[in-house]
Length: 315
Image (cartoon, rainbow, N blue to C red; front, top):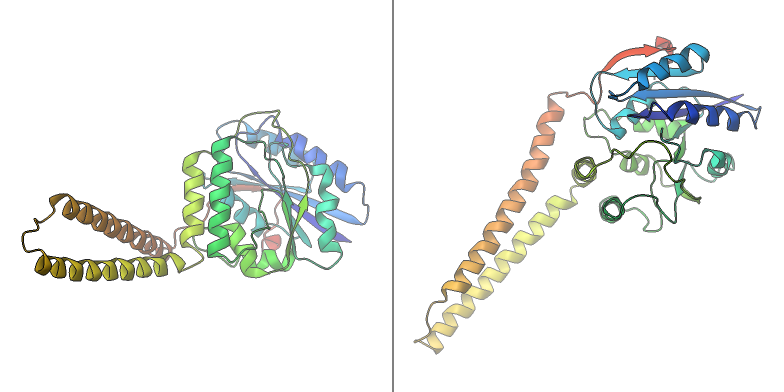
């Protein structure tokens, strides 16, 4: 019998996470040939999520609860959950009832057929704010460029992957995980399954601009040196433009000796070059800082407590 591991990152969802688990049980019951486990990661939630998870774990031994000592964000929580999964397939699902759990078998079908290793829900219309849609589009464009992702492939919070992909993902131990990049690094056999995202009926979203920007920086610096190559290219272009401008200035001075030195153009050039230099130094500093933090072995997550977890099952 094959097992499906559902990983749920939990934050401020005391009113919905138990309903998500009930939906998972109902869906898996449709296919008796599959067993399941639920790995719920409490990402240092400010509400009573941990109490709800304790109740679920007491009622169902298939529910594993991981209580983190510090909030690290969704991707860090998912990385933590992956270490505690034992299933043949690992599914990521949110705790807010917005993922269409009833469509799970459609999501799993491409993997069951053997054609793909990762299957991701694709929402033609996202039920989120315009600002978050803009941020998602920026992240998607960056991923296309940095990771070589197919522009038609879309990532979302609802996905499932084979065990070997999960095993490759958790080999990444640095403190800045970016799961989309890790999946694409493990396999190129990734597909989308089109479905409708549910409207939020309980609670509010907590993925603010700060978290979106941090995730964008992870994708920008963790899996490619293209930004550094871009910095080199911009430096060469600026140097070339400077040489051409210098030659033009000298020739123009010889041809028109009475021409006055342009204060405005000089200041514009200085501000442009100064801004470009500061941007490139900041980019290099971001890389250097992340290398320093990684060398200091800063953890992705710190586990305070676990429930229904056997040490031998931790992968």
